[in-house]
Length: 317
Image (cartoon, rainbow, N blue to C red; front, side, top):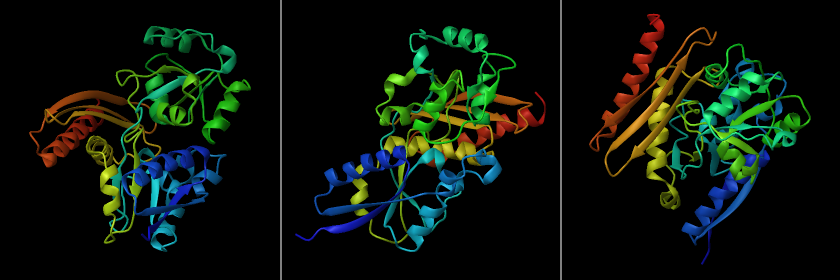
């Protein structure tokens, strides 16, 4: 039997390739008539590391080169972290499959030399944050604002580069700690570096965090992806992105959303966070929605929730 060859595009960072291979393995396990070839490439977002993303163009810099490769038919599909995807996805390059979600939450990471520090609850985190003198490493306004709830006048410092580079900077003494996505650390077999996983009551993660997505060209046959499209991940990702998109939340804006859905009961909880880019104000809350199988209604409630938070900010409440 002649197998259909599919060329897969990925960023060439260690984490991106690792994650891409996870999805490729699932595709091959679900389809015995498919052959996959991996092509990696550097994106602008990977190359420019001396400035934060909001200064160089936002999330689109992580996908631009891969989008072009799709359009030029140099690759057949690309695989991304959903949290790195722009809120506006071209109609000609649809998201075809949402892979089963990994750990969606942010993690506090300490230097290896401080691994003996016991952090088992939020009170320990608050004490640690208040006592530290060196900056916490994060380039995210979303994370900086939410860390500020734990300690006033907290010093933070931008950190760019891949996960291994960031950990090296941490261990060399440049930072007291880092805030990183738990999923990335776990997928790189670095779970032991996680000192504390932040629940959404403390830090609401970026929309789509922990979800890998497959992107392709409109109008082509991608039947082979149906078996890896995870219904729960797709629902949560779409709800979170609807919330963020309503608030024009790009890469740098302090906007966050986390959805927990029970598909059997047709209900979900959505945690939402919205702040101003000058960090002068923010609002956060959560809603519980019973949608009775009506996906449009589920999305409408997420949009309404986003607008409610925006109104509170605009009215100074």
